[in-house]
Each structure stands twice: as structure tokens, then as C-alpha cells.
Image (tube, rainbow, N blue to C red; front, side, top):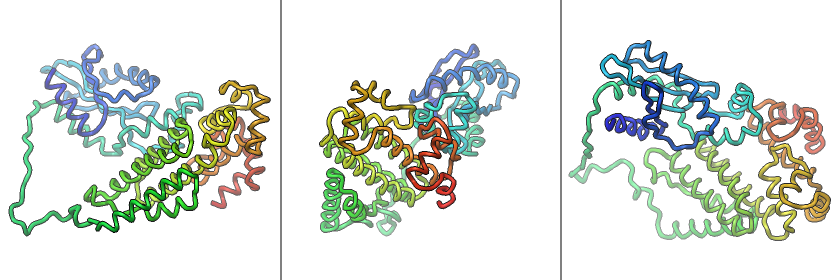
Length: 399
């Protein structure tokens, strides 16, 4: 058992994938997991155990089974034997072999006959999973060799060059900045955070350009990871600045979570540049439009609720019920303080999100309408044309 546990931890640490070991009666004997799987995923996984067992019992004992379920989650399963006797199996997964897109998630929801409100939960879950692509075949081969054979304890050593003429190709000091450059950068950082705190988007964008420097030396040989790390730091600092500007924590959490996922999913430096600008823009907009200062409690709560749940089937009455105010009182105060009606504001938020999705080019117009919260395709198209001045098709073609 100790050797099996050691091997399973080796798999978990090497590939960052959950590992589960079950006996011949499909009873769990070891489960190394981050416990982030939704219950519906766990229940679906349990249904495939017997099928996996039957397949492995019939196969050569050095085989591995690859399985992808209806949620497009993949697993590698290796049988455990004692002599020729089947003793159980090790299940490695879930992981992904295809990239996650909005279209991917919508297909999963349709195939499993789920409600649209699963979209947000699935987005977060899928982006937490490792992506293996076609390398799963080689990994399966490695797992068989690891689990079938006795484990050998390795010894860790390193090399040290005594001849001073040989230096590493990349060292932090190669990129060292002098005192004046460091001072200027931190002054730019102070300006950036100040402009975010007061919601000054134009000057925050200018400060962002001065703030961004070359920190590739922090992760030698991987500038993309260095840029991601800097972007994560910017996200955290921007959230704190917006909080000082009066934006409520639950709204800031939603912004921060969204950009953290986008940063990690980025595959190019240009993607990160665009994300950083959009991130600063959104935090500034949050301070300018949704800060606590200047709004009555009813309007403040309504704004926070709409901005968090505009994709859901909400209306004036459901918003009023949720925040604990009278419907007529909410509508009147909202109109007075924002010079726009509750439903008009809700439509504006939904159309802004729809425009972003159209420009991404991943979903059909019909899917986008449903995704942003409209009850029907025709109503979505009607509101879109009223606010944007052109049809959804014309807008899509123009971009």
C-alpha cells in the first residue's frame, strides 16, 4: 500500500492530475485530489468504473485504458495485478485533450441536457484542469511502466561549475536596472494605482505603459510565464486600488476571478498585453460606475446584483426581491440616480457582453443571445439593433 501511495503521489506531482486507486470491488483505497470537481462530475465518473474494470480485466495486464465521458473529460486507467489476479485500478484524471472554448462548454451542456446556469460553474471548472492534448498516449505508457514495475528511489544531485569563465547564459543581473530606473517604475506604479482608485481610465492607461517593464529574467527561458506572473500581480494591486475607490468586494472578486482565468489561459504575449489593458479599463469603470460613494443603498445593491447576475433570467421584481426593497421604490431611485431604467441598464450590460462574444467569434449569434441572458433570439436581435444601430449579423460581418 505504501508503494502504491508513493507512486500515486509521484503521478500527481509530475502531471498535476488527480489520482484515485480502487480495489477489485471498486472501493476507493486512495484519492489524491484538489476537491474542485462539481458533484455532477463526480457522479458521472462513478458510473464508468464498472465499464473500466470489465475492459481492463479482459485486456493484457500491461494495458492502459483511455476513456472520455459525455462531459469531454478524459481519464487514463491502469490495472493493478498480483500475479495474474486483478486487484484494482488506478484512475488518473480528469484532464482535457481539446481546448476549452465557449462553444465547447455549450456543447457539453446540451449533450448532458443541463440548464444554462451551469455555464459559469463549468467555465471555472474546465479552466482548472490540465490540458494534455495528444500527449496522453505517451503519458499512459509512462504510467503503465511506473505502476507495473517496482518503484526505484532516485537520488537528486546537481552540478557546480568551478571554472569562472563558464557562466549561465541568463542571469538576473544581466537585466538589472539602476536605481533611477527602479525609482521611475515605482513612481509609475503609484500613479497607476492612484488613477484606478479614482476611476481615471485615460490616465491609468498611460501609466500602465510606463509601469510595464521587462521582467523576463525572473523566469529564465520562459518570458510568457514571467509576463503572466506580472499580470497576476497587476490584477491583485488593481483590485486593491479599486477597493480603496469604494467598489464592493463581491463585485471586485468577480472581476479578479475573470481576469485571473484569462491570464492563465493566455498563449501569447500579445494576449497578455490586451488582457492587461482590458483589466485596467474594467477596474476603472468599476470605480467610476459602481463605487459605493454617491449611490443610495437600494441603487448600490441593485447595481452589484445586476453586474454579477445579468446573464441570469432576472427582472425588476426578482432584483427587488433579492436585495430586499420594494419594486416601485427600486425603479424610481434607479432612474433618478443613474438617469436610466433598471431594464434598460440590464439590456445595456447584456449587449456589451454580447458584443465581446461576437468579436471573439466562437459562438453563434443564437448561442450568444441565450448566453447573455435573453429569453429568445428575436428579442435579443431587437434590443441589439435598438442599442447598437445595426443588426447582429451586420455587426458580426463588420468585425
